[in-house]
Structures are given as C-alpha cells and as structure tokens.
Image (cartoon, rainbow, N blue to C red):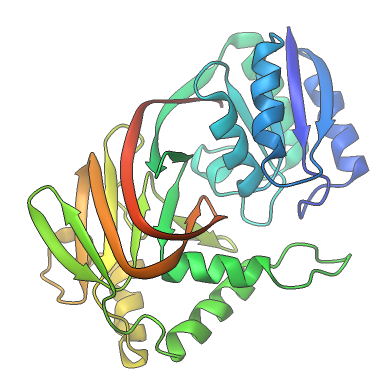
Amino acid sequence: MRALLIVNPVASRVNSAVERTARRELEEAATIEVVRTTRPMEAASLAAQGVRDGFDAVIVLAGDGTANEVLNGIGAEVPIGLLPGGGTSVMPRNLGLPPSIPAAARRFASALKEGRERRVRVGRINGRRFAFNAGVGLDAAVVRRVDGQVRTTKRRRSPDVVYARELLKMVARGAFSHPHMTIRVGNQVDRVAFALAVNLAPWSYIGPVPLDLAPSATADGGLDIVAPRRLYRRDVAGFAQRILVDHRHARGSGDARVAYWHDIATAELRCDYPFPAQADGDDLGDVTDVLFDVDYEGARYLI
C-alpha cells in the first residue's frame, strides 16, 4: 500500500520533528511519499497528481485551509487522512480523531490496514467544496484580517482568541449592522447582513470550546444556513446567547435577527456589492453572486 503525505511546513503545529514522527507511525501500514507545499492551492494539484499516480490514500499534515485544498483536489477517489497540524483543525475534531498528531497517525495506520473510513457528503460555494462551513460577509472578513496579520516565528498562526478579538472589533464598528444581501432558499427570500452555510456541527472551535452555530447540521443531510439580518453592538450578547448557547434560532423561535434553514440542497445569495467569502477558513476573495449547494458524492475520510 502507498500513501501520499502532504505537509504544510508553516502550519501551526508542524515542524520537522513532528513530520518525522508522523511518517514513522504511518510507515507501519504503508509506503509513504512526502511532498511539501510552498504556495496557496498547491496542495490541490499535489493531491490530484497523487490520485493519478495510483496512491491508495492521501494524508494531510496541515491546517484546515490545506485540508480544504486537498478535498478539492481529489474528490472521493481515495480516502483522506487529516492529521491535526493547524491551530484549530476543525474537521479532525469533528471526525473524532485524537488531538495528538502521533496518535492520529497511529489511528490512520490502523485504518489503512483495516480499510476503516467514513464517507461524508460536502458542501460547495460557487463550486468550491467545503468540509464543515463556508460563509460570505462577517466571518470571511474576519478570516481575511486574521490571515493578513504578521506572524512571528514562534506563533506562525494566529490563535483562536485573535479570531474572536477581530470578530468583536468588526461588530463594534457596525460593519454588518444592516442587510446588504438577498438570500433565496426555495420560494423564500430574505434580506440579511451575512450568511454562513454549515455542513456539520460543530461549526468551529475557540480553544477547546465547540461553537455549535448550527447544531442540527449532520454529515448525512443537506446544508444548514444561518443568516443574521442585522448585528448591532447592543445585540452581541443576546446574539451570542442564541447562536452559541441555547440555539433558539435553530429551533424556529422566530428571532427577528436571524434567518435559519435546515437540511437544504441549495441557497442563492446576491450581494449589493462584493463581500469576502471563505470555505473552511480559506479566503476565496470577494464575491457578489453565490450558490451554496451539496456534493452528495462527498469525500472518504480515514477514521
């Protein structure tokens, strides 16, 4: 058996020692070939080439952005193994993998021997596949701000608390206090300030705390769409309570601030002017027209 190990050497938890340890654990089950990324979107082409070269699995030692690239590079042709090399590593957590990279590598070695995997359907934003969430507006703008910060050699990736801080800064400035987008889901049309499509829960994490933005989202159905109609500074506490704690928006509480759809196949979004977009925390640039939909073929993950 042959497996391709794609490494992002500048991911938060990755260094040469970690790479050697992961490779050693994986070599218990397969012949491992290592390739390292040097630029954005390179992982997608490396993964696609790995499929063409006949590798039996593609394993990623990186963060969520590189994992998303691989997801878009190989589809469901071969299983993907996600080693938690990033600062958040949402999908490895959602798959129930160990937080330790060596332990996760040992799990994958066992999975390769036993043929153990899980098929998960994925979402798409304008054709770009995403594993756990995609968004237009607030969250994508925060992703761009965090990614744009200068990273020191000791902390190459901004921690989750920086994301939360930048989020609060943007809300405090009133950047998304009014609706500037029109969303259409089936026959329903609404005006919203920003929109997120969630493929499975949790939506993300801050440190060890899961953020269950759309707790009813599952890997077997359609997408859940969360689209706040406005977000003023005075709304932040109540909005956080409803979005992150008691989930009343997801239970059809009639919250005038949040539009919510569960298990939908498509949603169309038209922005009054270009807004940032993101998929699995990867900046997709600015968009005006957006189609969220579901790729039911999905992906195969080692577990």
